[in-house]
Amino acid sequence: MEIISEQVKKFIGNKEILKGINIDVKNKEFLGIIGPNGSGKSTFLKCIYRILKPSEGKILFNGKNIDELSFRQTALDLAVVAQHNFYNFDFKVLDVVLMGRSPHKKILERDNEIDYKIARNALEKVGLKDFVERNFTTLSGGEQQRVILARALTQETECLVLDEPTNHLDIKYQLQIMDIVKSLNLTVIAAIHDLNIAAMYCDRLVALKDGQIVGAGKPKDLLTEKFIKDLYEVDTKIEALPNDNINIRFLPKHFK
Ligand SMILES: Nc1ncnc2c1ncn2[C@@H]1O[C@H](COP(=O)(O)OP(=O)(O)OP(=O)(O)O)[C@@H](O)[C@H]1O
View 1 (cartoon, rainbow, N blue to C red):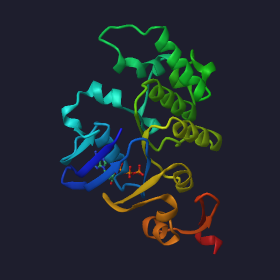
View 2 (view 1 turned 90 degrees about the vertical axis):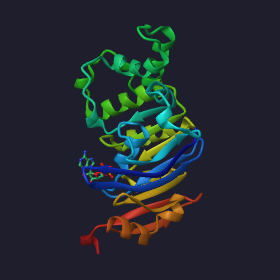
View 3 (view 1 turned 135 degrees about the vertical axis):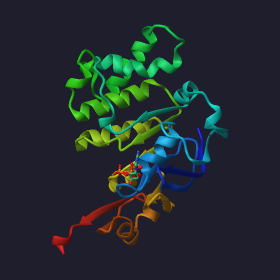
């Protein structure tokens, strides 16, 4: 699925949070959105997954203005893993994951064997197959985050929107979740704080600052020491790795 945003602006009160965002995510591309706290990443993603409506501009899924799509159709096109503190489900894990099937169902249609199989497969993928009977609220932050990813996988969409998907995860699961997402070969838009993770997994990055795009490109082209300094006000040392990969080493002030 291709996603385009044209001149998307968002005002909250009289503050201009997004100042005209243009992006073009190609089919099966993994696009990372980076930028400092408060730069507008989540606000932009919320416009894409329709929690917020842009004040100006438009967003197109496969050439169709999303204003013309039903919310059900949007849920068939796109699944969301938002920041973990968004969720407070007093349900069993399996029931939370099965919620991902609801856009595929008619009103009052019950989950069937296939739905259960899809949900259990998704839980297995995220390493939680033994958690089906647990209550969601009793899980750790990282376990909850993986359940939410399983729910998104269960939705079987062509596009995933991820808002800091590896928050709360230890390094094993940070890499595992990103590996799973990458292996699905879907269109992905992800806000990512960890620049090394962003560089490892994203085909292309867009950098936001103060609600504007200040840079875009392949990770190894965009993430220069100067660019990171301008964006985050931190010093780094960037090492080139094989296959166009890079490693960003952060240099705290006391290391100098
Ligand atoms: N409902 C709201 N009312 C007022 N200001 C808001 C609201 N929602 C977002 N903002 C402001 O909009 C700006 C962008 O917020 P947003 O959450 O999109 O940033 P972000 O880049 O995702 O930040 P972070 O990296 O900290 O998650 C921030 O200054 C935030 O305080």
